[in-house]
Length: 606
Image (tube, rainbow, N blue to C red; front, side):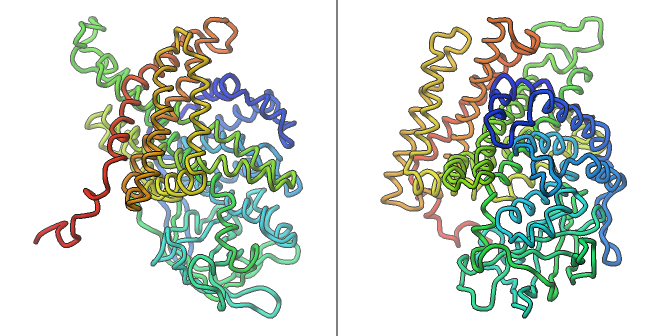
């Protein structure tokens, strides 16, 4: 398995020089303690934990997997000890309120942590990651009594949390939820039903597990308008906050999965389990989706994680593995053959991985600042501020979730290809990265669902193209400002053309959809991928611009070679990856009939 090394040089370049996080944090209500020295210390300690504790148990965790025996789930060797260190380090509450035992840091700092944890060991990161979703939902929507009961042990990491949505008959279409809740005389409820695909649904890492569950009240309206949200602990808390009696929350099975095998994906049965209502009756979906934008950023990070880890493994191998001679002549004449990194096609794969990892990182870090403003709206009790930034973030999240996870999967497959046959066998760990990456394009909404959300809801219905116009205005301004810069002139010109085309395509689809509603579904995948390629191009041009400025002014914190590599990778992206957008542009405006007119009976003939 590739030994993970946290890319702190690139992380620091992006947060300090590209996005000016120090100034960003200084302007936040909860950012006063996130000064550069503190942030750097947190990054250093997190990197050390990820490299020395989590990375070494990634491959072994995949080999061993989780086990369900006699009703108890056990995680692989080393996971319990690693989680104890996680709790002792206070990592769970890094970005949560101090009143519940957290450190009160900005949410974006938690996302930087998530990237390092996820790259080192995505399966492990699922356990504390699912807790964050439960914590955020309780924090914003639960009563003061429920917050006081659950948030402190969750923030400290003594308890973990899950989000229980999916049932055997429904995944994306949650209007089909059948789990039912019946009221008790004391104001609590009894919940009965089965949930599947519950990540971190049961395990031996913490003393209690708190499930946030969608269920339907007896008199609830049909469909999504009749779903409520409940807290259901595996063990009932006692009056003093300790763990009490078992609450009839039963793990009946663990899913046998393609990847992330060290993360327990459970079938959970609620058997008249006591529950407490979060938010208003029949408003469960609204409460659950409050932090959906940030949850999708967390999943988008997985694309960056797998691209980064596969790149690290492939790069080390390409420098050592020798095969044939470079077409331009011997590069290492004293050796039996040249290292494969001298071959242009191998460099194409490596640079693709690097471009997706570092370009995706920039996209995530930009969106993380929006998330900080959104959370500050909640902290300040400013509903308008919250909605403003949540709406802005809502345009970016389907793009980064859908596009980055697809590119992360591609990068993971490229890593196997660099290794050749050795990438296909388990001992090198490259095939595990690809298996782990595969789920990222599926959960938290498949790529197709993200595409429909982007084009159908965010672009056509909610903003009538306004979201695209707002972001392309940012691209256009950058292009105008850099047309005379010799290092970025070609990129600026190219970006200006794509910004204009993005708006034209949006308008064409809007007009086409008036006559043919299927156009939206037919075009949505291509629209999302086009959006992703153009958006990443902007962030690569931005990195190249900053790198060029630092080289010219000589005031950067990095070496000249680092900045030159940034510019070179940006040029590779514009030359070899951005042109893919043209194919998506062509396809998205084709009539839907080539997709919709084939009769179902004619898809195959026996």
